[in-house]
Image 1 (cartoon, rainbow, N blue to C red):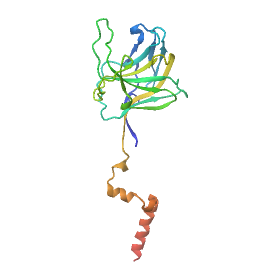
Image 2: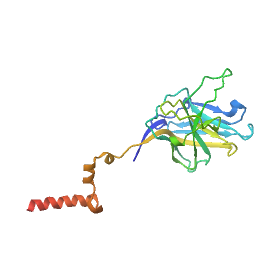
Image 3: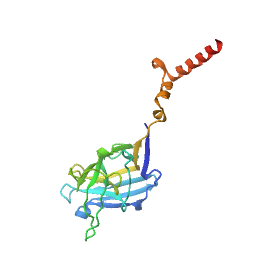
Image 4: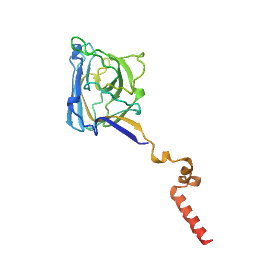
Length: 227
């Protein structure tokens, strides 16, 4: 079955750098830094440097959507991250993040922490990475939060890209080239919607091909004309 795509970024919704916001561990005393660079309307680059020394092995660098979204993705089955060339991606582990809640900023201007729903993926090579809803796990400040309930697909307020150390697993420069981020759902082929009687006419007897069925009908028509 083919996929039906709803582009969130890229595709028919061209990338724009002013729709993304930086959120790095510098707000907590870290030294990591990330960028979302739009090379063309169909090509964005999430890149930067992940530092794990300042925070004792921890660290994160991320970009997220500007403002508060109101995405209803109930009819979809997950998210596709479409990775483009070079021929080999950097092989590092990234996370796509979703949020249902965004709280007012604190008095010092910093954002209050809320639950993020993260789906991890490794950028091994160009191509589509499918992240189904079951792949998204609730986390709070990088740690899994099992009592968070369920992700509300009808009210996604934020989409983000994150590079983090995963508690010491990785560090250093990173670079992820992207075609698009989109929601997807499977759509049946037209023949899947044909009713039972019509499907019988499409099937060849005894495992024969559709071509043989057509020939059989032709011979029957010819014989009927001769009788």
